[in-house]
Length: 413
Length: 145
Image 1 (cartoon, rainbow over the protein chains, first blue to last red):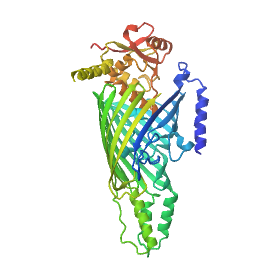
Image 2: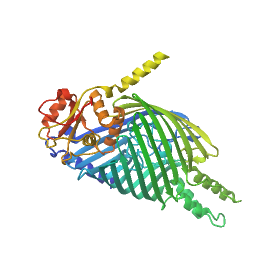
Image 3: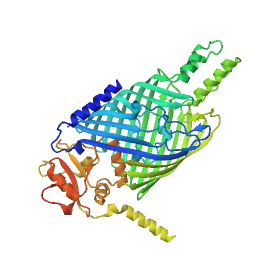
Protein backbone atom coordinates (compact mmCIF):
# COMPACT_ATOMS: atom_id res chain seq x y z
CA UNK A 1 0.00 0.00 0.00
CA UNK A 2 2.78 2.41 0.97
CA UNK A 3 4.83 1.56 -2.12
CA UNK A 4 1.78 2.15 -4.29
CA UNK A 5 1.25 5.52 -2.60
CA UNK A 6 4.85 6.66 -3.20
CA UNK A 7 4.69 5.37 -6.79
CA UNK A 8 1.57 7.49 -7.39
CA UNK A 9 3.20 10.65 -6.04
CA UNK A 10 6.41 10.10 -8.03
CA UNK A 11 4.37 9.49 -11.20
CA UNK A 12 2.36 12.66 -10.64
CA UNK A 13 5.54 14.71 -10.22
CA UNK A 14 7.06 13.35 -13.43
CA UNK A 15 3.83 13.66 -15.43
CA UNK A 16 2.97 17.20 -14.43
CA UNK A 17 6.54 18.43 -14.60
CA UNK A 18 6.33 17.91 -18.34
CA UNK A 19 3.18 20.06 -18.60
CA UNK A 20 3.10 23.80 -19.08
CA UNK A 21 2.11 25.63 -15.88
CA UNK A 22 2.90 29.25 -16.50
CA UNK A 23 4.61 30.78 -19.49
CA UNK A 24 6.79 32.84 -17.15
CA UNK A 25 8.10 29.92 -15.19
CA UNK A 26 11.32 28.22 -15.99
CA UNK A 27 12.29 24.74 -14.96
CA UNK A 28 14.15 26.02 -11.87
CA UNK A 29 11.03 27.85 -10.63
CA UNK A 30 8.88 24.76 -10.89
CA UNK A 31 11.23 22.06 -9.76
CA UNK A 32 13.47 22.67 -6.78
CA UNK A 33 15.91 20.37 -5.12
CA UNK A 34 17.17 21.43 -1.69
CA UNK A 35 19.38 19.64 0.76
CA UNK A 36 20.33 20.01 4.39
CA UNK A 37 22.47 18.23 6.86
CA UNK A 38 24.42 18.13 10.06
CA UNK A 39 27.82 16.58 10.55
CA UNK A 40 28.47 16.26 14.24
CA UNK A 41 30.58 14.54 16.83
CA UNK A 42 29.48 13.96 20.42
CA UNK A 43 30.90 12.37 23.52
CA UNK A 44 28.25 11.09 25.89
CA UNK A 45 27.01 8.35 28.18
CA UNK A 46 28.45 6.13 30.87
CA UNK A 47 29.70 2.56 30.67
CA UNK A 48 26.38 1.16 31.91
CA UNK A 49 24.01 3.93 30.87
CA UNK A 50 23.78 4.83 27.20
CA UNK A 51 22.76 8.28 26.05
CA UNK A 52 20.73 8.94 22.90
CA UNK A 53 18.95 12.01 21.61
CA UNK A 54 16.35 10.03 19.66
CA UNK A 55 14.61 6.86 20.80
CA UNK A 56 15.21 5.57 17.26
CA UNK A 57 18.98 5.64 17.94
CA UNK A 58 21.28 3.21 19.69
CA UNK A 59 22.80 4.20 23.03
CA UNK A 60 26.17 5.94 23.33
CA UNK A 61 28.22 4.47 26.19
CA UNK A 62 31.03 6.80 27.35
CA UNK A 63 32.35 7.17 23.83
CA UNK A 64 32.75 9.50 20.89
CA UNK A 65 30.37 9.05 18.00
CA UNK A 66 29.48 10.86 14.80
CA UNK A 67 26.11 9.15 14.46
CA UNK A 68 23.79 10.74 17.06
CA UNK A 69 23.70 14.23 15.53
CA UNK A 70 24.67 13.54 11.93
CA UNK A 71 21.86 13.55 9.40
CA UNK A 72 21.48 14.36 5.73
CA UNK A 73 18.29 15.21 3.91
CA UNK A 74 17.24 15.84 0.35
CA UNK A 75 13.99 17.53 -0.56
CA UNK A 76 12.30 17.88 -3.93
CA UNK A 77 9.49 20.38 -4.45
CA UNK A 78 7.56 20.30 -7.70
CA UNK A 79 5.07 22.96 -8.70
CA UNK A 80 2.90 20.66 -10.77
CA UNK A 81 -0.24 22.75 -11.32
CA UNK A 82 -1.02 26.40 -10.48
CA UNK A 83 -2.33 25.50 -7.01
CA UNK A 84 -0.83 22.06 -6.59
CA UNK A 85 2.65 21.18 -5.31
CA UNK A 86 4.37 17.92 -4.49
CA UNK A 87 7.07 17.49 -1.86
CA UNK A 88 9.29 14.50 -1.17
CA UNK A 89 11.95 14.47 1.55
CA UNK A 90 14.35 11.62 2.17
CA UNK A 91 16.54 11.34 5.25
CA UNK A 92 19.81 9.50 5.79
CA UNK A 93 20.71 8.92 9.43
CA UNK A 94 21.76 6.01 11.59
CA UNK A 95 18.57 4.50 12.97
CA UNK A 96 17.98 1.16 14.67
CA UNK A 97 15.67 0.12 11.86
CA UNK A 98 16.64 1.25 8.40
CA UNK A 99 14.49 0.59 5.39
CA UNK A 100 12.85 2.46 2.52
CA UNK A 101 9.84 3.23 4.69
CA UNK A 102 11.94 5.06 7.31
CA UNK A 103 14.13 6.87 4.78
CA UNK A 104 11.16 8.58 3.10
CA UNK A 105 10.29 11.11 5.79
CA UNK A 106 7.77 13.01 3.71
CA UNK A 107 5.86 12.50 0.47
CA UNK A 108 2.80 14.67 0.10
CA UNK A 109 0.72 16.83 -2.20
CA UNK A 110 -0.23 20.41 -1.29
CA UNK A 111 -3.35 22.00 -2.71
CA UNK A 112 -3.77 25.72 -2.10
CA UNK A 113 -7.12 26.93 -3.49
CA UNK A 114 -6.56 30.42 -2.03
CA UNK A 115 -3.89 32.31 -0.15
CA UNK A 116 -5.58 31.42 3.17
CA UNK A 117 -6.36 27.73 2.76
CA UNK A 118 -3.85 24.89 2.43
CA UNK A 119 -4.81 21.23 2.15
CA UNK A 120 -2.15 18.52 2.25
CA UNK A 121 -2.33 14.78 1.87
CA UNK A 122 0.30 12.05 2.14
CA UNK A 123 3.12 11.50 4.61
CA UNK A 124 3.94 14.73 6.45
CA UNK A 125 5.75 16.08 9.49
CA UNK A 126 3.63 15.65 12.59
CA UNK A 127 2.94 19.04 14.09
CA UNK A 128 3.25 18.49 17.83
CA UNK A 129 5.84 21.08 18.85
CA UNK A 130 7.88 24.07 17.62
CA UNK A 131 10.52 21.98 15.89
CA UNK A 132 8.36 19.03 14.96
CA UNK A 133 8.46 19.70 11.24
CA UNK A 134 12.19 20.49 11.23
CA UNK A 135 13.79 18.51 14.02
CA UNK A 136 16.36 17.12 11.56
CA UNK A 137 17.13 20.59 10.21
CA UNK A 138 19.91 21.76 12.52
CA UNK A 139 20.45 25.00 10.62
CA UNK A 140 16.92 26.14 11.53
CA UNK A 141 17.38 26.13 15.32
CA UNK A 142 19.87 27.48 17.77
CA UNK A 143 21.03 24.38 19.63
CA UNK A 144 23.21 21.41 18.72
CA UNK A 145 20.06 19.25 18.67
CA UNK A 146 16.40 19.51 19.69
CA UNK A 147 16.18 19.69 23.49
CA UNK A 148 16.48 16.09 24.68
CA UNK A 149 13.99 16.31 27.56
CA UNK A 150 11.33 17.78 25.32
CA UNK A 151 11.84 16.15 21.94
CA UNK A 152 13.26 12.71 22.68
CA UNK A 153 10.17 11.25 24.45
CA UNK A 154 8.08 11.76 21.31
CA UNK A 155 9.88 9.83 18.62
CA UNK A 156 7.20 10.37 15.99
CA UNK A 157 8.57 12.22 12.98
CA UNK A 158 5.72 11.91 10.51
CA UNK A 159 2.19 10.67 9.95
CA UNK A 160 0.18 9.51 6.96
CA UNK A 161 -3.05 11.38 6.48
CA UNK A 162 -4.37 14.82 5.66
CA UNK A 163 -4.20 18.27 7.17
CA UNK A 164 -6.11 21.47 6.55
CA UNK A 165 -4.69 24.87 7.44
CA UNK A 166 -6.26 28.31 7.57
CA UNK A 167 -3.90 31.28 7.73
CA UNK A 168 -4.49 35.00 7.72
CA UNK A 169 -3.15 38.32 8.90
CA UNK A 170 -5.03 39.70 11.87
CA UNK A 171 -4.26 42.83 13.86
CA UNK A 172 -2.03 40.98 16.31
CA UNK A 173 0.02 39.18 13.69
CA UNK A 174 -0.01 36.22 11.35
CA UNK A 175 -2.47 33.59 12.50
CA UNK A 176 -2.57 29.90 11.56
CA UNK A 177 -4.96 27.17 12.56
CA UNK A 178 -4.47 23.60 11.44
CA UNK A 179 -6.31 20.34 11.97
CA UNK A 180 -4.98 16.96 10.93
CA UNK A 181 -5.80 13.30 11.07
CA UNK A 182 -4.20 10.02 10.07
CA UNK A 183 -1.95 7.33 11.46
CA UNK A 184 1.59 7.24 12.75
CA UNK A 185 4.18 4.98 14.33
CA UNK A 186 7.79 4.54 15.31
CA UNK A 187 10.51 1.90 15.53
CA UNK A 188 12.63 2.51 18.59
CA UNK A 189 15.35 0.85 20.64
CA UNK A 190 14.62 -0.21 24.21
CA UNK A 191 16.90 -1.76 26.81
CA UNK A 192 16.50 -5.34 25.63
CA UNK A 193 15.83 -4.99 21.93
CA UNK A 194 13.64 -3.26 19.41
CA UNK A 195 10.14 -1.97 19.91
CA UNK A 196 7.59 -0.84 17.34
CA UNK A 197 4.46 1.09 18.04
CA UNK A 198 1.61 1.97 15.67
CA UNK A 199 -0.90 4.66 16.57
CA UNK A 200 -4.12 4.89 14.64
CA UNK A 201 -6.00 7.06 14.36
CA UNK A 202 -4.23 10.23 15.44
CA UNK A 203 -6.03 13.57 15.39
CA UNK A 204 -4.66 16.98 16.25
CA UNK A 205 -5.03 20.73 16.08
CA UNK A 206 -2.47 23.53 16.17
CA UNK A 207 -3.03 27.27 16.58
CA UNK A 208 -0.22 29.77 16.21
CA UNK A 209 0.22 33.51 16.12
CA UNK A 210 3.44 35.17 15.02
CA UNK A 211 4.96 38.53 14.24
CA UNK A 212 8.47 39.19 12.98
CA UNK A 213 9.72 38.96 16.56
CA UNK A 214 7.68 36.45 18.48
CA UNK A 215 5.61 33.37 17.99
CA UNK A 216 3.15 31.64 20.29
CA UNK A 217 1.52 28.30 19.64
CA UNK A 218 -0.71 25.75 21.27
CA UNK A 219 -1.20 22.16 20.16
CA UNK A 220 -3.43 19.25 21.00
CA UNK A 221 -3.32 15.69 19.72
CA UNK A 222 -5.19 12.51 20.60
CA UNK A 223 -4.32 9.02 19.52
CA UNK A 224 -5.12 5.36 20.04
CA UNK A 225 -2.19 3.00 20.62
CA UNK A 226 -3.27 0.32 18.25
CA UNK A 227 -0.36 -2.06 18.13
CA UNK A 228 2.99 -2.64 19.85
CA UNK A 229 5.58 -5.15 18.73
CA UNK A 230 8.44 -6.39 20.89
CA UNK A 231 9.53 -9.99 21.35
CA UNK A 232 10.76 -9.42 24.92
CA UNK A 233 7.68 -7.49 25.97
CA UNK A 234 5.38 -10.10 24.43
CA UNK A 235 7.14 -12.88 26.39
CA UNK A 236 6.77 -10.95 29.64
CA UNK A 237 3.10 -10.20 29.03
CA UNK A 238 2.36 -13.83 28.13
CA UNK A 239 4.12 -15.03 31.29
CA UNK A 240 2.21 -12.53 33.44
CA UNK A 241 -1.10 -13.50 31.86
CA UNK A 242 -0.41 -17.19 32.45
CA UNK A 243 0.68 -16.77 36.06
CA UNK A 244 -2.03 -18.31 38.26
CA UNK A 245 -3.73 -15.77 40.51
CA UNK A 246 -3.05 -17.84 43.61
CA UNK A 247 0.70 -17.49 43.00
CA UNK A 248 0.61 -13.73 42.32
CA UNK A 249 -2.84 -12.09 42.36
CA UNK A 250 -1.60 -8.81 40.82
CA UNK A 251 0.20 -10.42 37.86
CA UNK A 252 -2.57 -9.69 35.35
CA UNK A 253 -2.86 -6.12 36.66
CA UNK A 254 0.81 -5.54 35.86
CA UNK A 255 0.27 -7.07 32.43
CA UNK A 256 -2.43 -4.48 31.74
CA UNK A 257 -0.19 -1.68 33.03
CA UNK A 258 2.83 -2.62 30.93
CA UNK A 259 0.89 -3.43 27.78
CA UNK A 260 0.33 -0.28 25.74
CA UNK A 261 -2.13 -1.68 23.23
CA UNK A 262 -5.64 -0.31 23.42
CA UNK A 263 -4.71 2.76 25.45
CA UNK A 264 -5.36 6.36 24.45
CA UNK A 265 -2.80 9.16 24.69
CA UNK A 266 -3.51 12.90 24.74
CA UNK A 267 -0.83 15.50 24.09
CA UNK A 268 -1.10 19.19 25.02
CA UNK A 269 1.67 21.75 24.52
CA UNK A 270 2.31 25.48 24.66
CA UNK A 271 5.27 27.18 23.03
CA UNK A 272 6.69 30.66 22.78
CA UNK A 273 9.68 32.12 20.94
CA UNK A 274 11.16 35.61 20.78
CA UNK A 275 13.90 37.12 18.61
CA UNK A 276 14.52 40.88 18.76
CA UNK A 277 17.44 43.23 19.27
CA UNK A 278 19.79 40.24 19.29
CA UNK A 279 18.06 38.63 22.26
CA UNK A 280 16.51 35.21 21.70
CA UNK A 281 14.23 33.20 23.91
CA UNK A 282 12.24 30.04 23.38
CA UNK A 283 10.20 27.91 25.70
CA UNK A 284 7.81 24.97 25.44
CA UNK A 285 5.87 22.95 27.97
CA UNK A 286 3.85 19.82 27.36
CA UNK A 287 1.92 17.11 29.08
CA UNK A 288 1.21 13.68 27.65
CA UNK A 289 -1.73 12.14 29.45
CA UNK A 290 -2.28 8.40 29.12
CA UNK A 291 -3.19 5.38 31.18
CA UNK A 292 -0.09 3.73 29.66
CA UNK A 293 2.71 4.76 32.08
CA UNK A 294 5.40 4.46 29.39
CA UNK A 295 4.22 7.61 27.62
CA UNK A 296 2.54 9.64 30.38
CA UNK A 297 4.86 12.51 31.26
CA UNK A 298 5.31 16.25 31.53
CA UNK A 299 8.27 18.13 30.09
CA UNK A 300 9.50 21.57 29.18
CA UNK A 301 12.45 23.88 28.60
CA UNK A 302 13.51 27.51 28.58
CA UNK A 303 16.26 28.70 26.27
CA UNK A 304 17.86 32.17 26.34
CA UNK A 305 20.36 33.48 23.81
CA UNK A 306 22.31 36.61 22.98
CA UNK A 307 23.58 37.26 19.48
CA UNK A 308 26.82 39.21 19.08
CA UNK A 309 27.47 39.65 15.39
CA UNK A 310 27.48 36.25 13.75
CA UNK A 311 27.83 34.38 17.07
CA UNK A 312 24.96 33.48 19.39
CA UNK A 313 25.62 32.35 22.96
CA UNK A 314 22.86 30.45 24.66
CA UNK A 315 21.82 28.56 27.74
CA UNK A 316 18.99 26.07 28.22
CA UNK A 317 17.28 24.52 31.22
CA UNK A 318 14.97 21.55 30.63
CA UNK A 319 13.15 18.74 32.43
CA UNK A 320 11.12 15.62 31.76
CA UNK A 321 9.24 13.65 34.40
CA UNK A 322 6.88 10.71 34.15
CA UNK A 323 3.44 11.18 35.65
CA UNK A 324 3.72 7.75 37.34
CA UNK A 325 5.97 6.95 40.28
CA UNK A 326 8.27 3.90 40.28
CA UNK A 327 6.73 0.73 41.71
CA UNK A 328 8.08 -1.64 44.31
CA UNK A 329 6.33 -4.99 44.19
CA UNK A 330 5.46 -6.33 47.61
CA UNK A 331 4.80 -8.65 49.25
CA UNK A 332 7.26 -10.82 47.36
CA UNK A 333 6.43 -14.40 46.52
CA UNK A 334 8.26 -17.17 48.32
CA UNK A 335 8.34 -19.13 45.04
CA UNK A 336 11.76 -18.46 43.37
CA UNK A 337 10.26 -18.47 39.84
CA UNK A 338 7.53 -16.00 40.76
CA UNK A 339 10.00 -13.88 42.68
CA UNK A 340 12.22 -13.69 39.59
CA UNK A 341 9.20 -12.74 37.49
CA UNK A 342 8.37 -10.01 39.99
CA UNK A 343 11.94 -8.70 39.66
CA UNK A 344 11.68 -8.58 35.87
CA UNK A 345 8.23 -6.95 36.02
CA UNK A 346 9.35 -4.30 38.50
CA UNK A 347 12.47 -3.50 36.43
CA UNK A 348 10.50 -3.41 33.18
CA UNK A 349 7.96 -1.00 34.62
CA UNK A 350 10.53 1.29 36.24
CA UNK A 351 12.97 1.24 33.31
CA UNK A 352 10.63 3.20 31.05
CA UNK A 353 9.91 5.96 33.56
CA UNK A 354 11.61 9.29 32.96
CA UNK A 355 12.90 11.70 35.58
CA UNK A 356 15.73 13.91 34.41
CA UNK A 357 16.72 17.50 33.88
CA UNK A 358 19.53 19.24 32.04
CA UNK A 359 21.46 22.47 31.95
CA UNK A 360 23.15 23.41 28.69
CA UNK A 361 25.58 26.04 27.48
CA UNK A 362 26.47 26.56 23.86
CA UNK A 363 27.34 28.80 20.99
CA UNK A 364 26.29 28.95 17.38
CA UNK A 365 28.48 30.68 14.81
CA UNK A 366 26.77 31.63 11.53
CA UNK A 367 30.03 31.86 9.59
CA UNK A 368 28.31 31.57 6.21
CA UNK A 369 24.84 32.42 4.93
CA UNK A 370 23.87 28.75 4.81
CA UNK A 371 26.22 27.14 7.32
CA UNK A 372 26.51 27.25 11.08
CA UNK A 373 29.00 25.75 13.49
CA UNK A 374 27.72 24.83 16.96
CA UNK A 375 29.42 23.77 20.17
CA UNK A 376 27.37 22.66 23.18
CA UNK A 377 27.85 21.21 26.64
CA UNK A 378 24.95 19.56 28.46
CA UNK A 379 24.94 18.41 32.05
CA UNK A 380 22.10 16.01 32.81
CA UNK A 381 20.86 14.78 36.17
CA UNK A 382 18.98 11.47 35.92
CA UNK A 383 17.11 10.37 39.01
CA UNK A 384 16.85 6.84 40.39
CA UNK A 385 14.36 4.85 38.27
CA UNK A 386 14.08 7.78 35.87
CA UNK A 387 16.31 6.64 33.02
CA UNK A 388 13.60 5.94 30.46
CA UNK A 389 15.33 8.06 27.82
CA UNK A 390 18.61 6.13 28.26
CA UNK A 391 19.64 2.63 27.25
CA UNK A 392 20.22 0.85 30.57
CA UNK A 393 22.60 -2.09 30.83
CA UNK A 394 21.62 -2.39 34.50
CA UNK A 395 18.64 -1.03 36.49
CA UNK A 396 19.08 2.61 37.45
CA UNK A 397 18.91 2.25 41.24
CA UNK A 398 20.76 5.50 42.04
CA UNK A 399 20.92 9.07 40.77
CA UNK A 400 23.50 9.67 38.05
CA UNK A 401 24.90 12.67 36.19
CA UNK A 402 25.92 12.75 32.54
CA UNK A 403 27.94 15.17 30.43
CA UNK A 404 27.38 15.53 26.71
CA UNK A 405 29.90 17.41 24.60
CA UNK A 406 29.03 18.15 20.99
CA UNK A 407 30.45 19.97 18.02
CA UNK A 408 28.58 20.09 14.77
CA UNK A 409 28.28 21.75 11.42
CA UNK A 410 24.81 22.38 9.96
CA UNK A 411 24.06 23.48 6.45
CA UNK A 412 21.27 24.05 3.98
CA UNK A 413 21.80 24.13 0.26
CA UNK B 1 43.02 44.87 27.87
CA UNK B 2 41.75 48.07 26.27
CA UNK B 3 42.99 46.88 22.86
CA UNK B 4 40.94 43.73 23.23
CA UNK B 5 37.94 45.84 24.16
CA UNK B 6 38.33 48.05 21.10
CA UNK B 7 38.80 45.01 18.89
CA UNK B 8 35.64 43.54 20.32
CA UNK B 9 33.72 46.78 19.70
CA UNK B 10 35.11 46.96 16.14
CA UNK B 11 34.09 43.34 15.58
CA UNK B 12 30.54 44.04 16.76
CA UNK B 13 30.29 47.16 14.56
CA UNK B 14 31.57 45.23 11.54
CA UNK B 15 29.11 42.46 12.21
CA UNK B 16 26.25 44.91 12.32
CA UNK B 17 27.48 46.87 9.29
CA UNK B 18 24.85 45.68 6.78
CA UNK B 19 22.18 47.45 8.80
CA UNK B 20 24.05 50.72 8.59
CA UNK B 21 24.63 50.80 4.82
CA UNK B 22 22.74 53.76 3.38
CA UNK B 23 21.07 52.87 0.10
CA UNK B 24 17.48 53.44 -0.91
CA UNK B 25 15.84 50.22 -2.04
CA UNK B 26 12.95 49.94 -4.44
CA UNK B 27 10.65 46.94 -4.83
CA UNK B 28 9.95 46.45 -8.52
CA UNK B 29 7.55 44.54 -10.77
CA UNK B 30 6.97 44.24 -14.48
CA UNK B 31 5.14 47.29 -15.95
CA UNK B 32 2.37 44.97 -17.17
CA UNK B 33 1.62 43.96 -13.57
CA UNK B 34 -1.69 45.55 -12.51
CA UNK B 35 -0.43 46.19 -8.96
CA UNK B 36 0.38 49.88 -8.55
CA UNK B 37 1.66 49.87 -4.98
CA UNK B 38 2.09 47.64 -1.94
CA UNK B 39 2.17 48.51 1.75
CA UNK B 40 5.19 47.59 3.87
CA UNK B 41 3.20 44.80 5.48
CA UNK B 42 2.25 43.35 2.10
CA UNK B 43 5.91 43.36 1.04
CA UNK B 44 6.83 41.68 4.34
CA UNK B 45 4.13 39.04 3.80
CA UNK B 46 5.47 38.23 0.32
CA UNK B 47 9.15 38.13 1.32
CA UNK B 48 8.53 36.27 4.58
CA UNK B 49 6.52 33.57 2.83
CA UNK B 50 3.26 34.42 4.62
CA UNK B 51 1.38 35.19 1.42
CA UNK B 52 1.68 33.15 -1.72
CA UNK B 53 -0.33 35.56 -3.87
CA UNK B 54 -0.37 39.26 -4.75
CA UNK B 55 -3.33 41.14 -3.20
CA UNK B 56 -5.12 40.87 -6.57
CA UNK B 57 -4.89 37.07 -6.47
CA UNK B 58 -2.13 36.46 -9.01
CA UNK B 59 0.80 34.32 -8.00
CA UNK B 60 4.15 36.13 -7.83
CA UNK B 61 7.57 34.91 -8.89
CA UNK B 62 9.73 36.25 -6.08
CA UNK B 63 13.37 37.11 -6.63
CA UNK B 64 16.08 37.92 -4.14
CA UNK B 65 19.52 39.49 -4.10
CA UNK B 66 22.60 37.23 -3.72
CA UNK B 67 22.66 35.40 -0.39
CA UNK B 68 25.76 37.22 0.84
CA UNK B 69 24.91 40.72 -0.41
CA UNK B 70 24.71 43.76 1.86
CA UNK B 71 21.62 44.94 0.01
CA UNK B 72 19.80 41.76 1.01
CA UNK B 73 20.78 42.19 4.66
CA UNK B 74 19.61 45.82 4.62
CA UNK B 75 16.35 44.95 2.82
CA UNK B 76 15.31 42.31 5.34
CA UNK B 77 16.52 44.29 8.33
CA UNK B 78 14.54 47.35 7.27
CA UNK B 79 11.45 45.24 6.66
CA UNK B 80 11.59 43.02 9.71
CA UNK B 81 14.40 44.20 12.05
CA UNK B 82 15.77 40.69 11.81
CA UNK B 83 19.42 39.91 11.17
CA UNK B 84 20.43 37.83 8.15
CA UNK B 85 21.27 34.74 10.27
CA UNK B 86 17.73 34.87 11.71
CA UNK B 87 16.24 35.38 8.24
CA UNK B 88 18.27 32.47 6.83
CA UNK B 89 17.16 30.15 9.64
CA UNK B 90 13.55 31.36 9.24
CA UNK B 91 13.55 30.64 5.51
CA UNK B 92 15.17 27.26 6.05
CA UNK B 93 12.21 26.41 8.31
CA UNK B 94 9.66 27.51 5.70
CA UNK B 95 11.33 25.74 2.80
CA UNK B 96 11.99 22.46 4.56
CA UNK B 97 8.56 22.30 6.14
CA UNK B 98 7.05 22.76 2.69
CA UNK B 99 5.25 25.96 3.71
CA UNK B 100 6.76 28.16 1.01
CA UNK B 101 9.39 28.28 -1.69
CA UNK B 102 12.16 30.77 -1.03
CA UNK B 103 12.59 33.69 -3.44
CA UNK B 104 15.14 32.76 -6.07
CA UNK B 105 18.48 34.46 -5.50
CA UNK B 106 19.87 36.22 -8.56
CA UNK B 107 23.46 37.25 -9.19
CA UNK B 108 23.16 41.05 -9.39
CA UNK B 109 20.96 44.13 -9.78
CA UNK B 110 21.43 43.81 -13.55
CA UNK B 111 20.07 40.30 -13.57
CA UNK B 112 17.21 41.36 -11.27
CA UNK B 113 16.23 44.10 -13.72
CA UNK B 114 16.47 41.74 -16.66
CA UNK B 115 14.33 39.05 -15.00
CA UNK B 116 11.64 41.52 -13.86
CA UNK B 117 11.53 43.11 -17.33
CA UNK B 118 10.88 39.72 -18.90
CA UNK B 119 8.41 38.18 -16.42
CA UNK B 120 4.95 39.61 -15.96
CA UNK B 121 4.55 38.06 -12.48
CA UNK B 122 8.04 38.79 -11.17
CA UNK B 123 8.76 40.84 -8.07
CA UNK B 124 12.22 41.87 -6.91
CA UNK B 125 14.16 44.67 -5.30
CA UNK B 126 17.23 46.69 -6.24
CA UNK B 127 19.34 49.58 -5.14
CA UNK B 128 17.42 52.65 -6.31
CA UNK B 129 20.40 54.05 -8.20
CA UNK B 130 20.10 51.23 -10.77
CA UNK B 131 16.41 51.87 -11.45
CA UNK B 132 15.31 52.21 -15.08
CA UNK B 133 11.96 52.89 -16.77
CA UNK B 134 11.46 49.30 -17.96
CA UNK B 135 10.29 48.22 -14.48
CA UNK B 136 7.65 49.61 -12.14
CA UNK B 137 8.27 50.64 -8.51
CA UNK B 138 5.54 49.46 -6.12
CA UNK B 139 7.27 50.13 -2.80
CA UNK B 140 10.24 52.16 -1.65
CA UNK B 141 12.41 51.76 1.42
CA UNK B 142 13.92 55.16 2.08
CA UNK B 143 16.69 54.53 4.57
CA UNK B 144 17.37 58.18 5.32
CA UNK B 145 13.92 58.73 6.77
